[in-house]
Length: 258
Length: 162
Length: 106
Image (cartoon, rainbow over all chains, first blue to last red; front, top):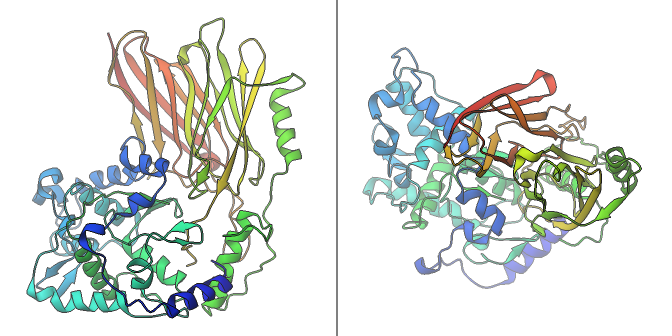
């Protein structure tokens, strides 16, 4: 939005004395509910959803032999419809070897490096998005459930800190929009609660499928804050917190958003 | 977002991205004076005349299905349909869609025939601004029919600048 | 990766009007979008789409830059006989893509 309007908005928010409070579990809504009827129809119908092009590509990649091990994902994991059911719903998950949580894309690259003896796929590449979309699709309709793991607690707190800290030239926190002012309008569009229920998703603004990290970078850009590079641990910590915040909500991958 | 600045949507999008880039102290000198091409009502009429020629343009028969308020002009669902028996003697030969304020007026042209069964086509289009959409159907008897729809296009709140 | 997704009924009754939905991955670069230096990125779009039913053309479309990325197009045809529905997209810079599905008509 216009810089002037942004300053006015920021001032209005700063002068409100409300402290960032988490949304009660029963009041949580997916961004799906803030979309128009036609955009919802695009997500609901697989024959019409442009994200399905990536899911199809992902299925082909799942079956393609890779790396010096000449193994495909399917060689170890079999039919994704069975083996990947519920996986995306519990990511990010703790990775013992790395001593920290990893997100689904990082987990795919770990498999590529260690199991397939292949090179990792670049973040935001068509291939990595396609695989993440294909795997994510297998959890569609299932409730988000991050494991209650002691080891992830410090990272969950780091994610919460990122969500509630003021940052950027507007000195805004994520919570001020998405916890305190969801449902109100920002530049003509409704502010959603910011649950990552449908990633990777087809964003009409991108005219392509993109990851949660891409969307977070858009947010940081909009807040006039410095964004981290793709794959940064801050994004995974934040995603861990967001998925915890969205616990119990249904996976919609691959979603469509305006 | 108020419309008091009379800026067409495409330039507004550019303006927002560029001021944001400057505000973020990226320091790239991007010319704000880039004025994208824009259809005018005259160029749309010319594009329509290319299709219709000197024949009369009757109002009716063709229907435009488009959301009146559009969240993002990048992918707008559109259905154009025409009531017709679609028999060998009486069918819709073609349907054409035009816009008033996109950089250029043509959107899509489809050729149908008696084998179509139903004269209805759906697609997703780009709309650069709030504007008028015009659909024209060409019948097997040589007649032309048209209808129009007005739509409002809003923009997503957090634009991608990087 | 120009992948196409076709949705058409695998089976239909003779004379039934069926809906065919098509989706193909393509950026549909309009030719109006400025790059970082302000110069327009050259146009690169799908310009034509043809559907044939057992070799007979039953639907044709001419696409312009105003068609959204990853072009989605649906249309109808009468199920006349069993056989193959074939689809062909062509566009700028020699772009071509084809796809086909079989249909059983009883």
